[in-house]
Image 1 (tube, helix red, strand yellow):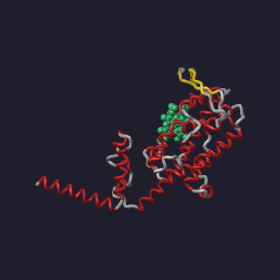
Image 2 (spheres, helix red, strand yellow):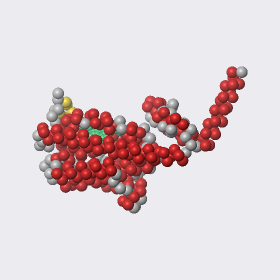
Image 3 (tube, protein in one colour):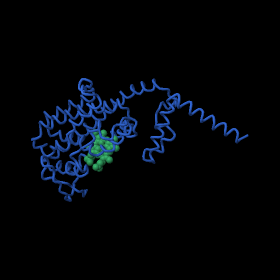
Image 4 (cartoon, helix red, strand yellow):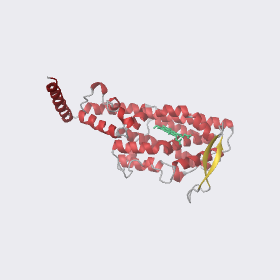
Length: 314
Ligand code: HEM
């Protein structure tokens, strides 16, 4: 069935800045934007449900791992944007060329400089899972450029969809400055309305002259792009386990079986119902309980309460 959606078109895309014009357009199931959205629905859910992403959304993210995530993104976007530059005049990509609005390479370089210092390039390297993703992007850009559309769609549309939420979570969890250092990747300064820009991007995708077979190949490639992202998340998750062990070894976990897992804290359920303040209190309590002083205070408080109960029951 056809779906009525607001579509946005722009007469001037770059340079002078886009002139957005809203018009009602009927989207059909055979439109590329609809085929991509439908064809990646299932794999999107899988990506959302990887442990790394779930932990991230709960604010359970350690700085070292977040930094490695930024490194992975840096190599990914360097490859993606190199191939986009190579194909910016290609008839199957030119309409999606929005360097001012979308490109993340420079923002990520600034984030890495913030995290690793001016010598950041010598402190970072491309991981195995990221390298696989990067290799595929280069292969596509050089051998089958039309498939670049799928890679650009998977990353940029995703960044414009969940980016602001992820930025807030990271800012709070990692106590990064409110001024945005370290989080420039999430900040699209040249895009005033992510919603409108996504509509423009969709209509540009739909205007590409592509036959059905090519559109199907694009959906398959987008699913692949999601899989590459999932592999990067799984790799980060594995690295995270070794980092977590270090942290636990250094501290004194009192929640033996819980192993410091905040989601198992009895107060954690409230997090879902409140804005996150409860989770913060819970995190504070967990942090306090990891410290010997916190344990003594907790024991004193508990003994006093037990004494009071005993007195009451006598
Ligand atoms: C943190 C977990 C995630 C959440 C909560 C999330 C949430 C969302 C939401 C709510 C939308 C719909 C926005 C709209 O209708 O305009 C969306 C769209 C999208 N997301 Fe995600 N997402 C997550 C992870 C990812 C990942 C890991 C990727 C790929 C790397 C991704 C790629 C996309 C794409 C390509 C779209 C556009 C779909 C379309 O309209 O065609 N997302 N996401």
